[in-house]
Length: 596
Image (cartoon, rainbow, N blue to C red; front, side, top):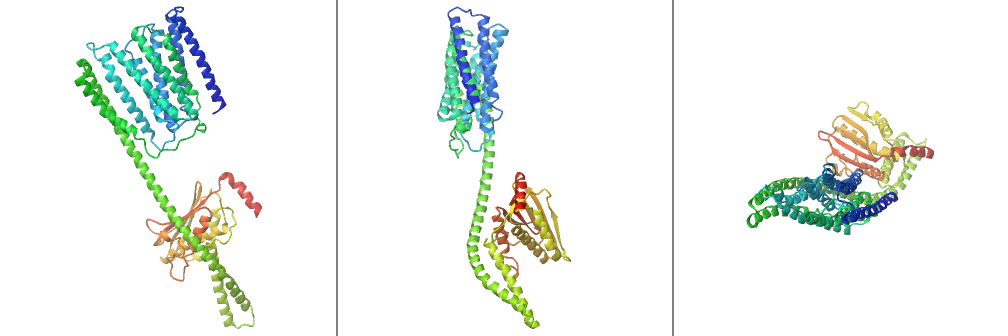
């Protein structure tokens, strides 16, 4: 937690002490009769209360910016509650300070005051201090709307019939009595939820919940005292009953000054299962509403107008609640579909990783065998080649034996190249890595193949990205990979009488991508193309080690190589190599120049 945030919070607690003390002193003097209960006392009480709620609204609303996810939703809900509370207080300011008359009973402010606690309950039920699995923010909003509809139903069912049921049944005293009881229950539930999350939180969130808990406790006490005083006709603005109310407002303001940095809290392990209680609560609510309405219709002793109002209110609320439940189920279905798609992708990635591991194990075991055999073959092969070249340099040797010796040397060199490929496959040859530009390697490959393609019906097309970043690798090994893949494409086109080879380079962070596509017959078994000794060429024309060597080289460069058949004809090889970041290219290039 930053020292500035701590200083602001401590300063506000000092302001809280001063404000509560001053308000308590003025209220005591008014209670003792030293200050008259007139406009000046109303101005003192209303202005302080409205100013505190305005400060709370500003301090809380500003926390929305810079947050995201569940924490952002938390601050939106709390801000909504703060604004409703401020609007209810604005009604008192309007009537007592501007119109200089008493607030009517019932009033819109009573409804706002009753509803303002609900967003705070919804915010607490989000528990933003705890990590949660991926969850749509719309579902959290619908959970809040379900909670709001339930409390609105209770208000409409219990209190509003006595307020707006018509002149025959209107009873303000009964409405006030039920309002006091229901409002106390609502505040008690909010305090209970705040206490639960406060006990389970740590760090900055625990301090924030503590302020909400203290604000709720003082407000619950205040609501009982003020409603009882109003019922007895003893309440006036600026009275002693307002002291716990002012204390509650001060603690509510402190919510906006508490730093909730995750560095000060110990995160709990994320739950793997979705929360089930909101769905259960929605089900219970849908069942309870008509049950309560039917019970009161048959067993309540209230007038007919009251019961009729309650039935109509119940039907209206059930329609709204059913709509919200439908929307939530729709969102849950979308969430489950996304989770299923993620699971399928994860399963496919797992299968690919398993195939790659199996292939790597086979190549590692085979590489050890090939390395040993290659070393044993290389020694006598070197001697055969040396003796053949020595014999061929003898000028006294006749022409026919000299031709035979040259053929022996040629076959020995061919065998030596095969042994070199085997050693490269076994990764026994160390690589010398530096910054390499892939476009340059491709141009070298095209120059090497140009003489062989002259007069053939094979066209090589290239589309090279001029802004392609460098890669870190061995230029000889990477040239070997590109040359071998291009040779395979050319061989495939020769079998069908010609065609096109398309080479394309692109960059997609963090990869440099090379695509080599041909219009040949395609590959019979693309999944086995990189297996050692697997070849589709005729016997004696291919060993089946070339693409295995390429696979090992690309993997040694921390890259990826894959192959797939095209939709119409031919096959495409895709090679991905890690790109050097733009910030690293210049020092890497300078280092490679220094080494050379």
